[in-house]
Length: 471
Image (tube, rainbow, N blue to C red; front, side, top):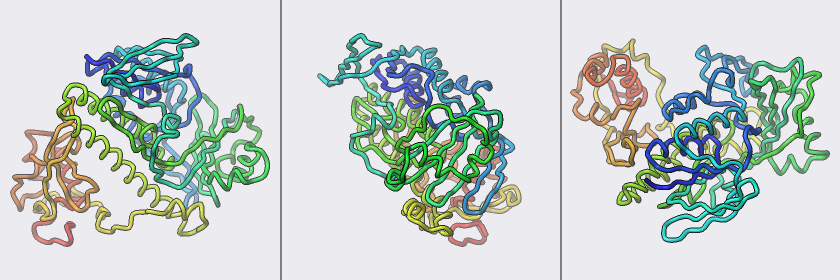
């Protein structure tokens, strides 16, 4: 059993701490603030819920703390639209209550929580860490075999990192009143974009994402410049008579990737390792993903030191791939506005957008309508050995490589792809293929995987081929 110290009790720190405890390690979770406390990142993408379930922390999403999002007003490049999700997959949380619930969840897994506590000094000696803590005014010393830094953007400040997006400042304020918007709102302005978030506690958060240099050069106080930007926007349209709660605040929201994300006895998680553009609303999801994979990487480093280089290589590659994927997605999203409005704010954010036509997926195919069509494995598909998560450790497995896939894929929906495809006879229909996998998965799951393979050009028509697409 190794002693693990985690600094920072946000989503990344709590999930990592819980998983390391579940893997049999002695874990200390250090947090300098008292909870509950206010925190941005209140809109959660659909992937957060299943990730928390996989970590056994789904109670943090109890119904009384969460608003499920069915509709969002969007005023982007195509004018005003009401986008609807009947499945209500998106979530809005009160981050104070949400993070507190995650801490309690980690505690229930056996994690010892030290809060409020601040790390005032850290040193390495003989491969171990020695941390000096200020625990609510008392000085204490803690020794650990492994250190996880999950202190968010503050932990990344001053460290070596690569900026991956245009400089961005998030300016925000909370409101209360008898009449407030009940539906989230996203809007593209002339030289900013705006986000309105109705919270489960009945308050409303209004945010403006701006260029730091031009925003700070404007006249007036921070609050006045913020309100000037919001004037006439959809975000504040239904806030007449509302009262602003507390001060207007501004925090850095520029995307970046830390250079020193992993070592043999230390790891960076969440925003301490990778910050993505806020337009994706996936920061919390990405933080939790880094914590889940980071726990397996850390467990490998501690229990299989011979595989340390493999584990560290896997973690670096995972963060690099995530950073690049989100960077290009965000650039494409900003480009839709830049194409009609122009201006440095939008054009700067659309730089580096994806232009490789060959990497774009084809028009989605209705797999059920083509279930009787004979297919075969594309000649462009190949299998390569790649590092991947294998149970509680990082291992090596054969992965599918194809020009339309950004990275090799070893698993899809929890199924190893190589055994499904390596000996696939040509000329079988999609339905026959799915039935052939019935001893490994339900028919619906087999059809879903076959559909994904078709839509990514891995399975192609046995009769007609056109650049790897079903014709």
